[in-house]
Image 1 (cartoon, one colour):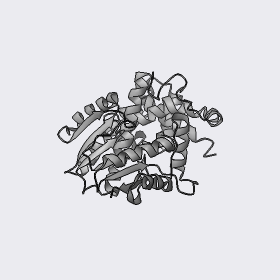
Image 2 (spheres, rainbow, N blue to C red):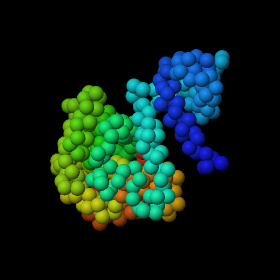
Image 3 (tube, helix red, strand yellow):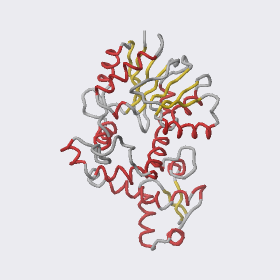
Image 4 (cartoon, rainbow, N blue to C red):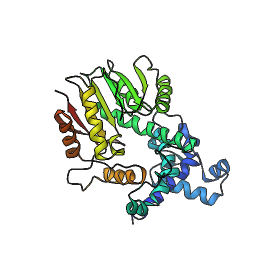
Length: 328
C-alpha cells in the first residue's frame, strides 16, 4: 500500500504548496479550518482534509485547535527562506509527474518523455520559460543543501581554485566558498545558464570570489583551476560522453589537481539504494544517462589517468557520495 499510494503524499504536499499554505503560516502564524477556508477561498470540507493530511505527513502541527508549520516546512517550504525547496516541489509536480506517468513508454522506447529529442536539441530547447525558471530554482535549492554536506565530507582546504563544470545556478560555489574562506570558484556552463549564476552570486555578495564563464564543456574547459567539480552532471550522459569529459578534465588540471564527482551513487551490486535507483529511472524520462556506480566512475577515472581514487559517502538530497580522482 505504501508503494502503491506514494503519489498521494506527494500530491498533498504539492497542492498545499501551490495554494501557498506554508507561506501563509510563516513565522508561527496559526490557522483554524474556517480561517484557512476563508483565506484561500476553499470550501471548509477540503480545507479540513488538506490540513489533516499535511499534519499527518509532518508538515503541520496542531496545538490549541490551530495548525502551524512544523520546523521542517518553516525552513524549506516558505517562500524567501534561505533553503526554500518549493522550486523542486513545483518542478516535480508540473514537469516530472507527467513524465513519470509515461514511464512504461520510456521503458519501451528508451527515450525521454518530458521532451522530444526528435524535434528538440536538448531538454531546454523550446521549453516554456516559466518551466525553465522552475527548473533552475529547483536545482538551486537541491544543490544548496547538497553542497553543505559535500563540503563537510570532502576536505577542499588544500585547493585554491574550483571549476564547477556544468555549475548551473552556482549554488555549490556559493556554499563551498562560504565554508572555505580561501577558495575561489568559477561557474562554467552554457552562456544563458552562466547568466543565471551571475545573478545568484550577486545576491550572495560573493562577486569578489566567484566568477562565471560561458561555454560547452564537451568542447573546452577553462584552465588555471586545481580542483574540478562534477555535481549531478555525469548522470545526464551516456558512458562514452562521460569518459570523454573526464579525459578533458584530466588534461585541464595541473599535477596534484583533483576531480570530484558528486552524485546519487548506485551501489556496485546494482541493488540500490532506492534514492539513487529511482533517480536513475528519472534520468530515463529526462536524459540519455543513468545513475552510475563507484566502480564505474573509478574505472573511467583510472582510464583517464587519475590515481589515488576514493569514494566518500555522505547523506544529502541530491547526492549520497563523491568519487574523487587525483592527477599525478
